[in-house]
Image (tube, rainbow, N blue to C red; front, top):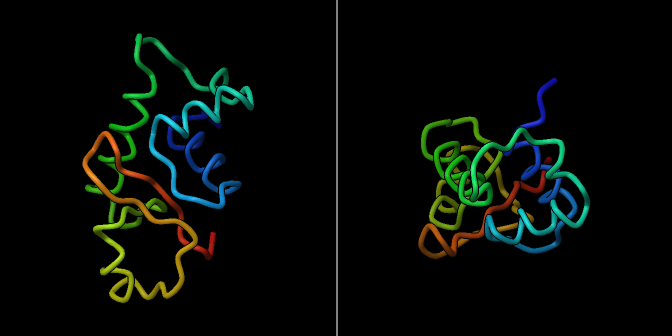
Length: 101
């Protein structure tokens, strides 16, 4: 199985007890050596990570990631408790996973 930017984000967020920006996710991935599992070709992979998170949440109704502006939609998805939330503009958004993951 291919290890993607979203795989890295999921692994990091599963162990985090707080929301994280894509930069924080990337830094933690570097600390844990997970960044080496992702195929990287650009100079700013953390921005690619942020873009992938943004697009996944925006275009994938089954995304495992959420952001604060979507917490209100939690009832519609049948999810009641969240472990992590995000807020702010794209550069400051904090990504999270629902509690049930």
